[in-house]
Length: 272
Image 1 (tube, one colour):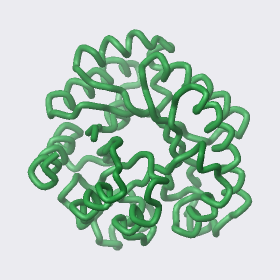
Image 2 (tube, helix red, strand yellow):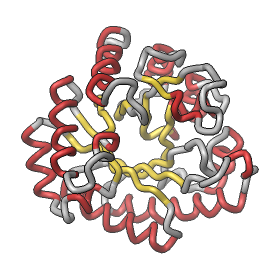
Image 3 (cartoon, helix red, strand yellow):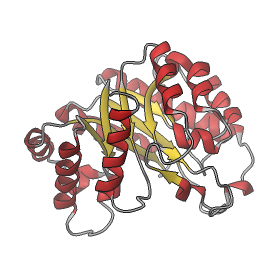
């Protein structure tokens, strides 16, 4: 399996210095022993669609760009056009996976009960993007996410009812899964070979912490209560041989420290 780390949290500070921050991200995760990286797809704009400039940095730090993360938030036609543009860039960088995520609600997600029509629309858009990706040698994976139309087990199952399984896989995120009240180990067992990609991040079980935005409870690996040994065993049982990508939205100290803590956990506990 490849061990990747997500880089978007490095690129949120200095809007006039994105290229420097992207290289800083690559330098730090390479130093820690990760072999691969992922990032939001709009990094293409930071490099003016110059894939060769990105390739030179990846080569410099001996890293593979394995995934680009597409936010579905501009409407189906604009989202599809973005996917086509990103796919062209991905082919030039050898990027194999495209994660998709629904738009996040601007108000409390509790104000939004399950919306089967919205979920169906996301599935049909996923199918359209999936067909394009398949033609370009890319594997699209849909990411159930807190605060979006596809988050809970019931919502994932509705999505699965409408999506073409030959075109689109799932990206399971251990922390979002736990937030949704699902057991990450059982989730992997339940969806089996539907899983094309996985995010590892831990979760503080204290539900009293910032209940209006529970993403602040995300933690480096080993600092929360998610059973990553069980998760890894479940991945082995389904013969998963893809990417384990560590992600953390909010670093308790700094991005480097969180990536280091998680890399040590992967090495010392999971022997990866």
